[in-house]
Length: 253
Image 1 (tube, helix red, strand yellow):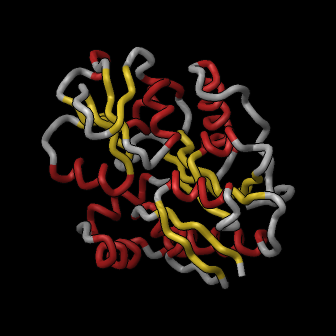
Image 2 (cartoon, rainbow, N blue to C red; image 1 turned 120 degrees about the vertical axis):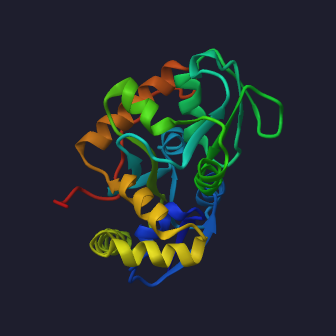
Image 3 (spheres, rainbow, N blue to C red; image 1 turned 120 degrees about the horizontal axis):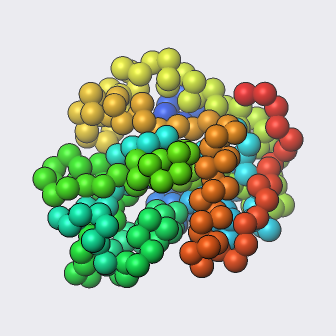
């Protein structure tokens, strides 16, 4: 049986909505799943795209799936009372590596400190960011929107990575994950209601959020990912930009 990592945030609801696969799910935040994958505790998981790049010699990725947005994503927010360009320090969550690197790219002069330390701004991701945007009147800057404004490309926050040596059944699992997303897209009201009952947000709020998430790993997403990795390298966050090594040769989506 394949051991499949699942990010604990609501953004995974469409991917697991109608999943029909014999897997053991292991739930964790993105940085935890990265560690478990590299330690051999799980077979495959959605992990921060920057962590794939940092460990690409040990990992392969599914060619048809990612977690991205073309513009605002809602669940990755920089919260600050200052104008964005005046932020000189950011307290960041330990849960995601990609978002921290994105802050370094967008705010190259800002000091990065742990969450809980006094700073000009704080970075929130996942459900904490959704709750904050819902409840906190402090201005929020959406990093997906800022990235699109900067590059004109989608931002790929996570990829589905498997550690080598690869286990059997990953191709079939990819088919099942893609089918689950398609089913979720075809039943948006049911998806939103089901996720509302699980995560506690209003269905209408979740329906709008799910519309902003992208899961297909197409040419524009790949261009956006390569651009992000090149800028991460230039910011000193990556020694070099690796090739995207896939689990198998591509087939039409």
